[in-house]
Image (cartoon, rainbow over all chains, first blue to last red; front, side):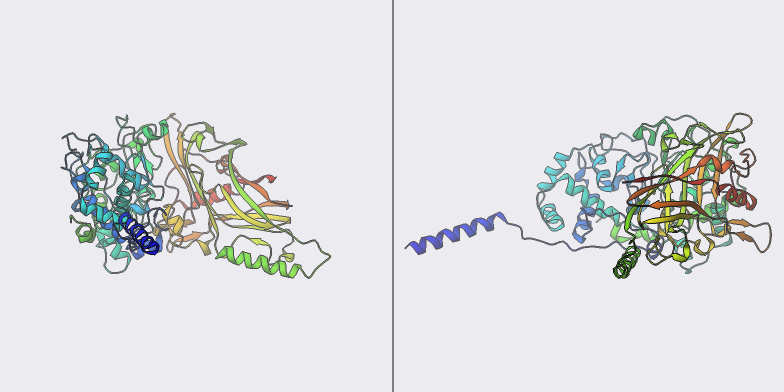
Length: 354
Length: 262
């Protein structure tokens, strides 16, 4: 009699413990970035936080979240609404429209090669430190998704598909802001652009036209374009220094840029150097999208420089308006810049709307 | 790997030293090489950037906005090199380098080790030609410190940017960039290794220490060539003669500072 009571008691105990673990333990599959050989050869390792290692399930979840309107207040907008994969994850309008129909004041930055932003300062003004933290703000920004994280988490928590995906990615079905942003960051780190015509040229697979070659020389010539000091080179395939500069757009500043973040007047008017890959897709240009065409951008550096107290000393001949390129050098410079378009990146099925 | 080699050498040295009971055994100690910057004795930090507050020997008022440079092959060697043993501290094998970025406080301190005794400390400003190969250093590529192939490739030794007041009291930029000199006005082009060895003198290392290496920024404009920014300001990279002048002036820029025992 005593033995049978004990057995029943143990069975009850065992059944209680199994009820606490309705979801089986799942070990996500570690994933690796598909790093182009040129990046492997030339650059230090990408930034992947130790508390957010890449996994197949984390990346898949991040992709679903990136394209899901569930993150916005009225389920009308996703990250991709302003970061369109067909536009190298940027927006075709100078400013992007939020859920309430209001426009922001900055052009949506393109998203690629983000894991090689070694200083980890994101956005035009560097206000966000780390890719995971960057993902927090747009969800709650009143002129962007205008939601709040508690609501987002509640909506996700009621979705069985997401419960399953979080379980697989993070071994928990308790969804949190921390896990959502980690998944988004994992997906964003996979957005790698490194297979343009110029990359193929560096791999000795194709030749440049004489115009493209001269354009590259203009880019690299300190006495002509002198673009390489900020925008990378054949030895820095990021094509950006990921630093902040005042590139002579304005004599006075309506937008302080980095200066508003640091509080240092010496940083006023400084904005992040954007990468110059995929320029055919990332129009319009500059932090406020003021230039619709590459010709306008080149003309700015050639004749349109405006002097201010914080203008970068690398902007040469600023008092004369710019470096005064010839018409041929301008055209060839544009031809070279277009060799940095990466159609494989734009059309990569891994990066499209699911 | 380099640390492992040094560790192995240290171990070998200790094994050999065990056989001698009478000689004083040099001890391995921790050394911090601390790079500091001054303008004729007045300390310069990133907080002094972006303001026209310095005056060079030629009388031009200037600001500093960027100061990044590379030193390579730092050595801490016995005064009498004939007594050099494997145990003495050559900091790494092959090319070692320290990338110093004053504004972002990168590389201002370098942790290493040395053996006790009277040592000579030195390094190379920039890279020797042998080590200045195009695109081979991932850290410097990532820091965008390359020199275009049309100028011989390799790396900047230094990027020193700022503004000066010209003769009309108008702000103008200067880009005092040091690279291997190249003369493109002749065919074939002439190149000249304008990096240089800096010998800081002797230090009696008796224990864990911080050794200060000082850069007097004013000297770049001063000795032996009084620099006229109205004549030499930007586009100095393809200017062969300017690179020779920069190299000459650099030789009096560095000096040994305080040695502080911990």
